[in-house]
Image (cartoon, rainbow, N blue to C red; front, side, top):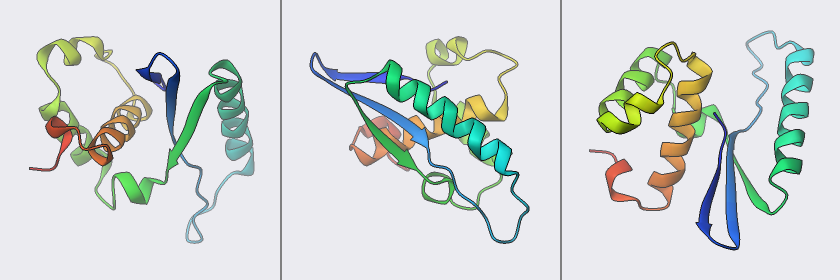
Length: 114
């Protein structure tokens, strides 16, 4: 769930997870190449958008996925929760988390840490 967020009629931002290779894990280069293609397609689709990427260590630190996703679910309104597919994968929840991190960095009150 990567989305271009309209900040004004002329300015858009595309927030994505930045690719990262970890030294202690075996990374499949094909996965990174596939992701590069997706990011390229999104960049082309939202040509006027400013592309912002955050590494996983920036936006979720070392917290386990289940904890991060539970925190996100607790912060969403009922209307927002209904918009998330009930069987959403961890990748979809990561996209919500990256968006929340972006809003937190922009000073949006409801996404500030409690």
